Image (tube, rainbow, N blue to C red; front, side, top):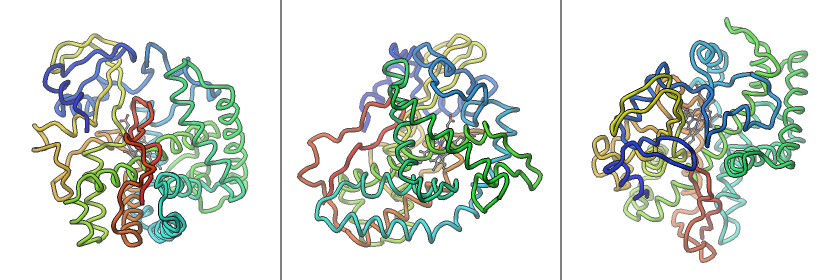
Length: 386
Ligand code: HEM
């Protein structure tokens, strides 16, 4: 799907992106080398288009670090505190709820002959599950969706205009106020939700401060929403464009086959295109030297198409071995939510296939799918199917 990345891998494995003021790497070997070495390639204070997160952020979270933008030892401590909530066993217990929700959304969505998959299933499924995990009250679920959308929009505005719009700053502040309120309620009267777990600590873990809880809740929303949404959208696009694979799934719509389609979609059309790091000293990569304190964009989507790692990479083949794909990152920052996405996306696909086994693009589908304009994420804005 990305001919431009193929050209970069061959001709310019180290490529200067003027607009982001960053060096991009596109080969598998360089990508894994960088992600495996947090001492050489830091996640702290990364400049995008010359700007630091402090200048870019419009929300007053002070200097609280979150997982994604910290290095050891801070990262090690934070990851230890929150990882209990995402262990595979805890996630697999959520299967019945994910299935019930998917079934309901699919039934409602397919009641019309033509429908927007993103609006009907791709977006509401992950956002509802995260809201439920966090313990957001049902009366605030609508607001939660609004906050989550505004967070993503603010991210694009910051890259485009240097700052978020007034509207999105206001929505962000509203969300912070609400999360602080819940954190305080749960500290006094714990329940079985994620926020209660974080503010209480326990099992050898210390409690998170209210600011840390806020920062983590925002991270979950940002990291866990559009990504799984994109995976659901991209898997349908891949299936419809590859009839052989779609036929294979129809013959055996087991959860294992649905999971295989999702894994191959992660490789073939990664929901996350690139990750960022800052060099802590001068380093040597394919294509040359990079000075200390430079921004690197690790194009994981491109690395997943490197024929040195995945033979015949442009073929969409759910039966291939996808071990080593970089769509969830690699090393200490490996996606915390991977088990959750690997539950949600296959269940959603299975429920959809059971109800509507032969989907095609609807006439309302524009000639070219609109993938939006984010530099870092890729998935359809809307996907009209029939
Ligand atoms: C980290 C991708 C879903 C939470 C990451 C990273 C990637 C990624 C590439 C590494 C970032 C880096 O190294 O700089 C994805 C994809 C998803 C997905 C492709 C869906 C298909 C989720 C979900 C959640 C989540 C559902 C939570 C509910 C996180 C968190 C981190 C993370 C908290 C930071 C981990 C750390 O820094 O230690 N994700 N993600 N992600 N993801 Fe995901």
